[in-house]
Image (tube, rainbow, N blue to C red):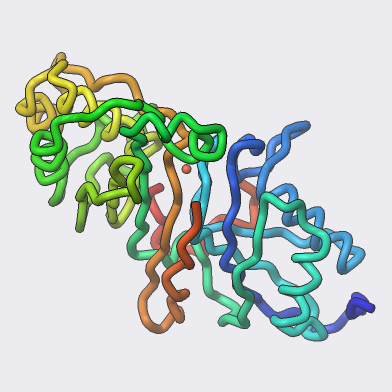
Length: 288
């Protein structure tokens, strides 16, 4: 038996840490007649509480992008305890969404606008094994080696505060195009290739995918390393990025909050709006 919904019972805010395989979703945000992660979560909560419950996420991942550390909140009647909700959602959600944890949080906690850093991972398949049907859904299966010195050098150039206008799909003039990248490095991905780990205070639309696509072309010898530096230093110039990397390799991995917001733990290891998301006048909007 699930706790019933009683009109008039005081709501409380619950924070969810979730993972999902983005292959069959048209992104996070609800879209009419399309399957989305937010849509599945809200449908599940409506099934459990017999009333519509809005879900707010920390970031709007695009179609085909995955998550191992998405953070979301929903306001539910006080009769719902975190452990009960975790079990109930696990029972009704589709198998490509997994609720890692549920906990109570402050009523004014906002997973998007309170975030101070986000970390994305991008898996690059360099071995022939990355083309396996059990791997290719979660990487860019290039299937051949790259110049790892050039790949590392390209990542180093990205660290720091820059204009990433050249690496954005669409302009965001009201929010600016400057981002501070705290870390950007390529790490081994099992025996299959490399993983880009990039952490920043904000990300522009498709920013990581354009960065990866350009870095890969540098490491293939198709364009000079200096192009990456010029794209960051001359965002209004004529030089253009390489095509974006496919969404299949991209994961929203972790979201960091100030300590007062009770940051979630780092996600467990696994194989980019509704009116309720509008910030209060006193809260600075997250530029993503």
